[in-house]
Image (cartoon, rainbow, N blue to C red; front, side, top):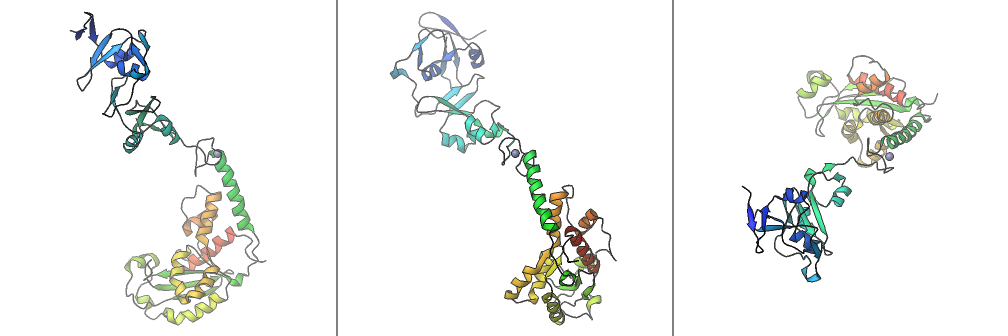
Length: 359
Ligand SMILES: [Zn+2]
């Protein structure tokens, strides 16, 4: 049994849901009023809103222009609107909408979101046009455009494929120029060094020092007895230096004059992953001298990372072993001892910089 309502004129109208009203293109008084129209005849159907008030539907063929005093004006109380689907949405200010994560379609598009669901709220502008708000959470994220050409969809590093390739080619050309340049270095004045430590923190101490020049000659290769640390179980597993091995070794204090002498005669001092080594060896210099020392330091790992980015995007890790594998370099001596590491670093450097030394 359908719900019916008898009008004062005697006519009977039926209750229909908003979806059905939408299909029939019936309009409410509120919608007509927003369009500056008013009904010229009786309602043709009705519905009861969730809050209990009656919504009358009118035939759009039977409307006239409304005089300005009947135009729709936003009221201060909380207004709602019924969408074609039957969903009731609330009126709210742009500010409130944004606080809820609701935005207009245009705004969402600028944020690279595409509206796929119906509006969740609306507002009425001063010129009476209705502005719908959509929930950003239910909107679809659009693929972003390339930051260089602005046209194509992003591929890597915020660039489209073509721009990425172009950028990579530029970086590669720059990198190749840097690596293939003639540096005219004296092999005797380019040193490679490696330290083994009790741990990786600043308070940790040096357990061995290895320095090799670019001819492959071992300049220094010694164990070091720490001042404070008595054991280093964690790093012992890595480098194999036990407390017993260093009991008769010289201390850093004994070695500093010789290390300074060696480093002072060098033009470049290179290590693989230089930051930890640098932070432990810099104390052999005063704060002022550290500036000069720092200027001579080169990091082989950083250079390998740059090379890999430019030429070997398939290489994802940049340990010394990764660099050696990449260039087909074999271990000289026992892998991972500081002597073998230092020699390997020297070899990796020579592949990266084929014209580093004078002939
Ligand atoms: Zn592009």
